[in-house]
Length: 371
Image (cartoon, rainbow, N blue to C red; front, top):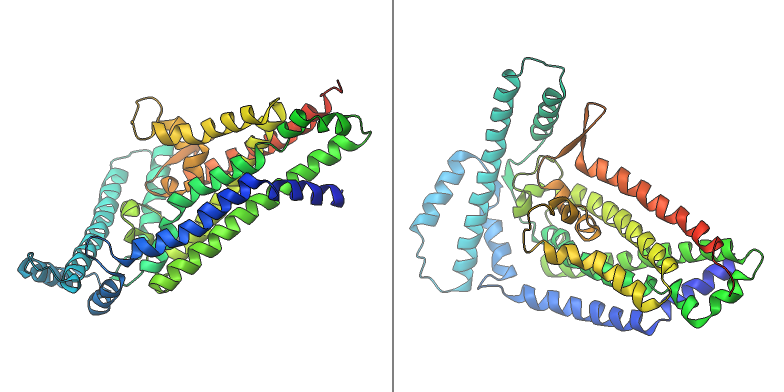
């Protein structure tokens, strides 16, 4: 079994297409990150950090009022990078205060809605209570410099595409290539070959997924920390624009941990789907095309906002591997009358689906006949 596992791992990592893609992504990506961070619309990372050192502190109404007055009095025609960066930082901090106020307003609205519900033990009341209790835990009372952690978390938007591409290229041929080359005839004629080879391929796929995510993790952490420092992990996720209305009380470090865990979970699930498609495909080209369509099509459709396809796009592998959509707003599923948060429900359901895909591989391979 160990020798089969090593052999399957060797076949995955010796594919030229895998290494070409690796080189393009993992050499070009750091260069792109470093170049894009050097200056963006006149805002430099050095001046942004300096601005935060002057402006970081509490998000009280009195202080924000003074900062708003300072912003209004600034000369908008100023062209120096330092002054422009300072003005942009001021606007960011005021925006953070607005997000804090929206959270408080949401809590008040929920309290009023709870008072209007007569049945204090009903599903709707439990849902409102859950959301209100989550909002109560959010600590968004001060602002600090957090560009490094923010960049690390935002990276997964692009990183998910890279993960998907490398999974498709590396795993789509794992079964179908043997059918093309005729190697499957040797394996199928072996007394114990089918089950052991299938297991070896599964373990090799898991290692490959872990390797891809691990390399991205190292590059992401390394480059962003080098460019922006690691300061600010204790800031709430609401510093990110996409999480302004999030009910989750994560700080950036907590969210990043959850983000990577779910990204890995859904990437493994996508890998199992690719293996299943490969086992059912007679050619490698067919396997690659089907896997690519399943991964890329929701990404394309999401830009058209087609009515009726919201759930298809939301629960696509691309969207789930990106993770952030699950934490932007309060979404629950009612299971036996109990509200269950969407990230938890989705993780459980897709873990079960992935296990089913994995188990289906064995009877599919066992039923194949030697020609």
